[in-house]
Amino acid sequence: MNQSRPNNQLIKDYFKKPTMLIRGILELLTIGAGIALIAAFGKLTTDLVRIVNEHSNTPLSTDAVSKYPFLGYTVPVIVMLLTAIAWFIIYGKSRSDASSSRPDAGFIILNVFAIIRLIAAIIAAVGGVVFAVFIFIKKPAQMGDDPKRPLLLMIGMFVSCAIILIVAIAYKLFIGSIRKTSKYGELYRSGAKSTGVFSVLAAISDGFSVLSALALVLFNKRIFEAVAERTSSEATQEVCRLFADRGTLIVLVIFFGLVITFVTHIVDAKIALGYNKHIRNAETYGYRENRPGSDDEDGFYGGDREDRPKRRSGYGDRFIED
Image 1: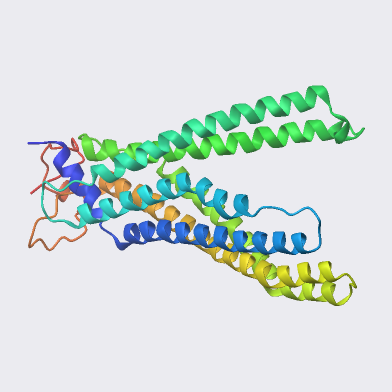
Image 2 (image 1 turned 135 degrees about the horizontal axis):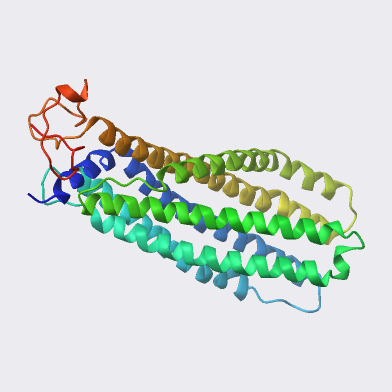
């Protein structure tokens, strides 16, 4: 018997939930929000350059602000698009009843990005620590005469770098656990709980950011209109009216982008913590592969362990089969 097959069905039974489809859609929405933000910012900057050119003898070009931001967004779009495709593959393959259908391709894509994310986190952490130590030793004049400032900056950098690195490690372990559980005859859930907890904390932070962005949406236009009314400079009035209109649009796009990020972290927490619970239940109660026509939809046995039929399989003593 192929020991990985029961585990593959265990993975499929969890990842066939609509939550995975929603996760892929959120990546596409993030791409849309980013494109909308760049377009709005580009239009704002173009109009701002036009106003400057009207009141200046040194004309400025709008090529950089109209083209380069979109070029710089190309790599993030590719990454997010591939991530969305990965979640769609995972959801589609998990929904299939065919025993040969495996969502491995989706997890391979996520694992590649998890490795890249971990490498980037290590580079950022090392760079942050080096920068913090340099500031602490050199104590530049910009830090003032207070000796505590460099120390506090170094401690803050150390904590930030540690959090970034721990989150990346937890996510890599989580994705790796899914792949190993699907591939081998054992159960793995390392990093799942940590990833879920960090996602919840990130969602809480996003919640405060959403409230701040909402305040800007409500008051941005009023602030710049009030400034325009109180100035006699025609150029300043045009700039204020521009920021009252275009700036409000940008803040609105940022607001929706933050909402999408907030929901994404909530979904990530649900997926990670749900997976941790799913595997823990399999460890505790045993699991059998769902077959067509089976009344046992969740695949788990209830009751006392002594009352369950026992036969060694892909889970060792933990996997129980009729």
